Image 1: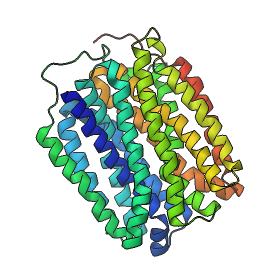
Image 2: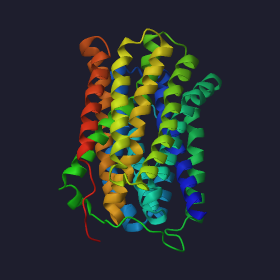
Image 3: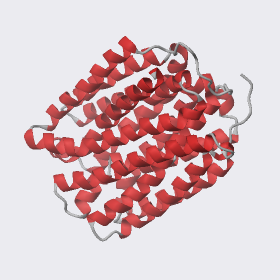
Length: 394
């Protein structure tokens, strides 16, 4: 029973994480107007978070393995919550870049810490559902951010909303430190592998895992950055309507996380254990590629939102098997191994945040960006045909 409470606490944290990071997209227009920023400057703001987040992954994963997820998560959650509030105080473009970079650096500890907690508390047969629950909650947090921010902006300034968003994380950090323990009284059976990051980086399966997670985040970060402004501008939507259409693909993504998590664990317990990670991931990338290719041809906002939802559903299906693979491979080094994968993923986010406005400016439309997403997803599905867990000694 206690391990389900741990999963629930980490799912709540994931919800808070994405609520905090998605909020910046909703306030793009008032920030741009107040500070005189164009789309390329806002792309730099979005990507400053992604860069800090990427750079912090491996150190955060090492700290999770070395000091445990209790201390790590307490510190990083408190830090990023304070930085969320500090976002509301910035007055200049450079200050905004620095705060968002540091915010990303602090948030980097969330999922490597979660991966290490799952290794400590859960058997391998439950890693799929646990990761599905955590990442489903993250998408619900992101989905809620858009209508919540729209409501708050109607009744106050964008600055005040960031002060409010700092509170949930601070409360969570206090409760986590007070009640969480590093391991259960009886340790469940965990994965038998314990591959250090230096060794994992020399294997082809892990290198392919890094590439496919780069591609996955290249797609998912669009939903947290440019999807809302893209729909608003292309179809001349109001703030409320854009928030509604942006929320739908994220809710679909949350559903995909549950589907993927249960599928991964069901396959793991069957005779198809060897493809329990690869089969859902391959399927997801093919679906995502199809959805992304359709977005430029959508004639109206509902159709575009449906195409985004299809692309999002597919790529979200790949997340749970990716993290389950890293926990399986890394074992007691799960924090650093998963952190390095998340580094690659968030480098994808960094590139995505900048590629969208640059490609749109260069070609006069966003079509080339979506075709690039399609191609990367197809290559990632192919990569998963080679991703298997090597046999290693403890």
